[in-house]
Length: 276
Figure 1: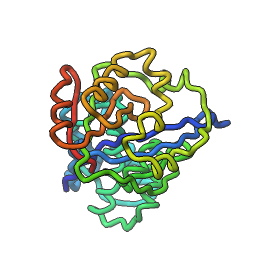
Figure 2 (figure 1 turned 120 degrees about the horizontal axis):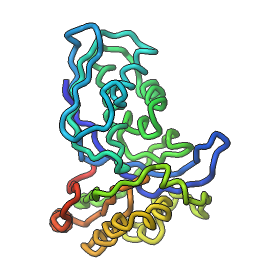
Figure 3 (figure 1 turned 30 degrees about the vertical axis):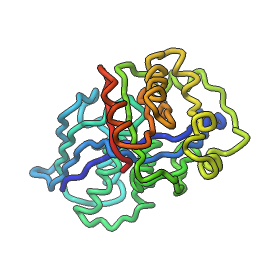
Figure 4 (figure 1 turned 60 degrees about the horizontal axis):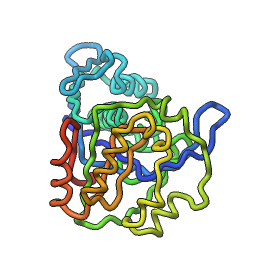
């Protein structure tokens, strides 16, 4: 069985407060994007689960990959035969696009289907939440308002035009999540993110819908800010860093504008296309 784990972007990201456990409460909207890895799972030839990875280099051994962690987490609540997994990486890592989280969540969904485990989405999301804050989102894989540490999900309706396209640009530079959090000042905005998105047209988002991580990331990684500014110069109606970076995306009114913008970036990983 083959599936295509997709990336996500964050539309707005408010860092509300620091929690007693050291994490932060946030408010963000995650939206699936059709930039995909490839994951195949088949019944195992041996007695142990295996993972083979191709495509982009992944800086961890197979046993520490989130996909294998997902298999192990699922085995804590369900019994099923050994599985052989084959992952082809396309989505850049360290980009704020959730590629590894998507791979893990899709693995849970596939194993549940292949071996007829009978788990529903809330049960799979609970398993996914033990793997990382982004993972539960990919169980549902539809636009969601994500609160708490990012694992409390509520469906949200975003009114994009049928012609709107997205360009995602991942420059060579990377910024760690720890660095991104190091200089942020948590603050509850006067208007909640979900209200802004519900009442403002996309054309008004640029000055109202913010990613708080940009305040700490742009001063230490100017190339990321330059990508954002170039996307706007190329005609994006809205541009923002995704998550804690370093990918930046722009929303464009049509295919032609999106394709022209994508061609203007050299030395970067670029996706131009649709929301999933």
